[in-house]
Amino acid sequence: MSQPVLQATSRTVATKGALNDLRRNGKIPAIMYNRHGTTTTIVLDGDEFRKLTKGVSESTLIKLVIDGKATECFIKDRQIDWLHSKLLHIDFFEIESGVAIRVKVPVHLTGIAIGVREGGILENPVHELEVECLPKNVPARFEIDVTDLKANHSIHVRDIKREEAVRILSSPEQVVALVKYLKAEAVVEAAVETAAAAPAAGTPAAPGAAPTTPGAGK
Image (cartoon, rainbow, N blue to C red; front, side):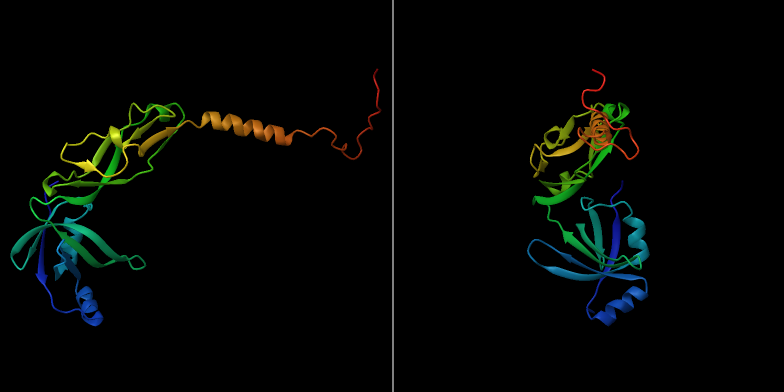
C-alpha cells in the first residue's frame, strides 16, 4: 500500500456554527499536534479523506500537506456521528524523524487452524498490539499464520516474528490466538443433562403408578 497524501489548509474558525458550516460544505475540521504540545488547526476535503484513507489504521504513516508544506503523521482519532454516519473531526499526530514513538499495530490471522478442522473454535482475544520503535520501522500489521495451531494450543506475543527494532510493549505471555476444543465440553454437558433428567432416588412415583411393596419379588 502506497503512502496516502492528504491536502489540507490551515483554519482559524473554531466556533460550533463555523465548524458546522464547514461540514455542510463537505469539509472536515481537524487538528495536528506533536509531542511538544504544539497544535495546528486545519481543514480537509471530506471525499478525498475518505477515499485515500480507506483501510488505514493508526500505524499507517500519512503525508499531510498543509498550505503546501508536507509533514508525516499518524491518524490518532476520528470523531464520528454514528447516528448519521458522518465524520466530524480528525486528530493527527506529527512524527519526528529519529524519535521513537508508541503506536498500536493491528493483528491479522491467516490460514485455517488444524484444531478448527478437528472441531475446535479459533479465538482471537487481541486485535492490536502497542509497539515502540522509530516511525520508519512501524509495521503495517502483524501477520500470524495459524495453520499449524492445534486444539488446546495457543500463540503468544513471544511467538510473533518482527524486526529487532520493533519492541512490543505487551507481555510476552499474552495470548493472541488459541483454539478451544469443544467436543470434550459437549460430552460433559450431555452427561450433566442426562443426570438431571434421571429421577432421583426416593422420588415419589408418578400419579397412577403401581405402588412398590418393600420386599416384593424376594
